[in-house]
Structure formats: structure tokens, C-alpha cells
Length: 459
Image 1 (cartoon, rainbow, N blue to C red):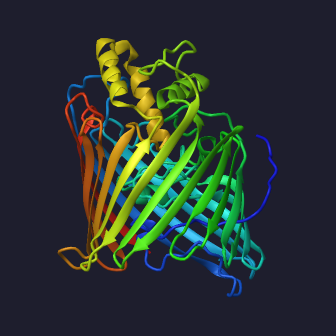
Image 2 (tube, rainbow, N blue to C red):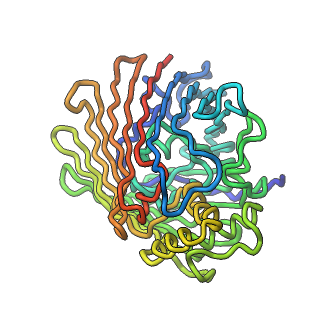
Image 3 (spheres, rainbow, N blue to C red):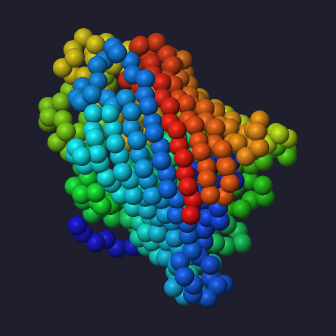
């Protein structure tokens, strides 16, 4: 490991809170906020504990155009998790935040006495110091989130390698409950807006995707700190418009981005999010990463794309959020990931993978890499989400969401119902499905149907 220096300036995220981020921790009554409580004297830890039980079952497709190599896909998984988030005030200017989840797994074909079934997810652990009025310095593992969109965030630059097992596929929950990155961050809030700078050092070499932890308490810094990265942001308050400019650097390469949102009337907010920079295609990036980590041989062919050329590529998410009088909120977004698979790429992917099962591992590795980096595989998609608090029945929140590929019309969808029984208990049901013909983005996935039953006890 090596220690890197820091250049400090200051921060804040732009845009309105466009979606209901109904993550497990957000539902904890009296959940602490991330802002330091500078007006209070030193106090004991403030926070909440919850115990979660989540049982997931899957309906699998028997035959795929491109078979998935390796071990058998489990048909069920049970996860018991102890969630906790605390904050301590060490003085009027210093606070410490800690967020963690301890898991115990059982799976189809893997009993409790077989192999590693326990893991720990250290989501956040950082200190906040108010160095001057409205100027904050933070250091530690921080879940730094950027972006105003919901389905995909082109400016959420610290998302790679952070995904954790969740009961829901809702991007809002996935973004909230994930691994943070070890970094130093400074932010300053002014009357005209805010500025920030964050630096995350490289501490480990990149590791294989899906590589198990060396120990149950492994913090997985190799997943979040395998590259030198920095991010500068500038946010301006201009009437009802909330523009933000971001400049991101990773291993000597720079990417720029922007966010903007504005209300239209009393019920609608429109927003846009963009980033662009020099990069290779998704397939080329995946194969290069596989070779670098020793997952793929050095002579692995580039499939389905034929070029490793680096060029300027764009990511875009534009859409709107509309809220009706019945409290229903609908988000509709168009998502464009220029490095993703085009219609021709998909055709070649299925043709090559079907003709030669020996290269199926490489073909699926490209899609596993996209999932690890939390990038869309398809170049163009539509995202639709509807949320209805207290829908149909009081204290029952209903949510439906879907991603639709514009290349082949295939889709993945989820509907959920969460019953907030009282301040101590919550129960949820999540039903998901992947639709489409066998030679399509979502119709080619091993899982056709899925259901998760979840019960949470808050303390």
C-alpha cells in the first residue's frame, strides 16, 4: 500500500431529491443524518440497529443460447443481516460516522457448515471536522454519491466494485446501501452554491471480479481502492435551476460531467445528467480488466467488438419526476451508454457464443464486468419507476420499476410491497422477472423469475 497526498477545496451534491430512496436503513425510525451536529455538546453514540431476514428464490431457464459456465446457479438464498449505523460527537467540531452490516448466508447447495457463509460489509467509517464555518473535511470510508437521475447516474464516479446483496433491485436502495471508498474529502457551502474536492488513493492492485473475501471481516478495500482517483465539483444556486459541474480523474485519465434539474409547475421536476471522456468500448474494457487480474489469458480475443480503439464516449440520463395528488411519484428516464452493446454487438455476441461454447466464459465475463462496474450493458434503455406510499392500504408502500432495452424490446421488472407494521417491524415482498426472446439482453439471463420475502426488526 502507498499513501497519497490531498488537495483540498470543498463541496456538495446538486439537484433536488428526485426519488424516494426507500433503502432498509432509511426506514429505520429516527435514523441519524450525515451532517455533523455542531450545536450539541459531546454525546453518546446516536444510531439504530436492525435485524433483517431475506429469503430469495429464483426460477431459472433450462437452456440458454449462450450457456453460463461454471458452478450451478443457486435456486434459493437466505440472508440474515445485522445492520447498524451510528454517529458520535467528539466535540462541537468533530463527529464520527460508522455504518456496517454483518451477514450470514445459506444457499441452495451450500449449507451452513459448508464453505464461507459469513461476511461483513463495512459500508462507511469516517470522521468529519468543521475546520471553519460551513467548511468540512472528512476522512475515512465514505459512500460518495453524485447525480440527479434514478435508473443510471453517469456522474456517480465512485460506484465501481461497491455493490452489495440487497432484497430489492431498486437503484435508489443499491446506491444508498453500498460500500464506500477510502478517501479524503473537503467541502465548502456558500450562499452562491458549493465546491468540493475528494481524493481516493490506490491501495491495492485490482482483484478478480467475484473473488471471495480472504476472511469474513475483510473490508474489501481492494474493490474500492484499486486506482488513484479524484473528483472536483462545483455547484451553483441559480434560481430554481441547480447546475453542477464535475471533473473526475482516474489513473491519469479525465472525465467531465454535469447535472441539472429544475421544477416545472408544482408537480414535475425535469433533470439531466451527462458525463464524457476518453474510453474503450465496454467489451474492450472488460477483456483488458480480465487479463490484468489474471482471470482471462493474455491472448484472450476481443468479442464481440473488433476494435480496442479509445475515443470520446458519452453517458447520458435525462428524464422527469411527476408527483400526483395521491402521492404517486413517477420517474421516466432515457439512458444512453455509448460504450455499451449496440444492436450489431448483441447479434454477434449471441452468434459467437452459441457457435463456440468454449468462449462462453469470456462472453459472460463481459456482462459480469458491467455488473461489477454498475454500467448498463445495452447502449440505449428506458427506465420507468412508480412509487405509491400508503398505496391501496395504509402503511403499505408500493413500487414498480422496469428497464427496457431499446435495441430488442426485452426488459427486467420488479414490483414490491413494503408493510410498515409499526416502528419496530417492517415486512416486504419483491417480485422480479426478466422478459424477452432468447437472443435478447434480458431474455438471455439465467434467471427468469425471482421473489424475495423480507422481514426487518428495528431496535
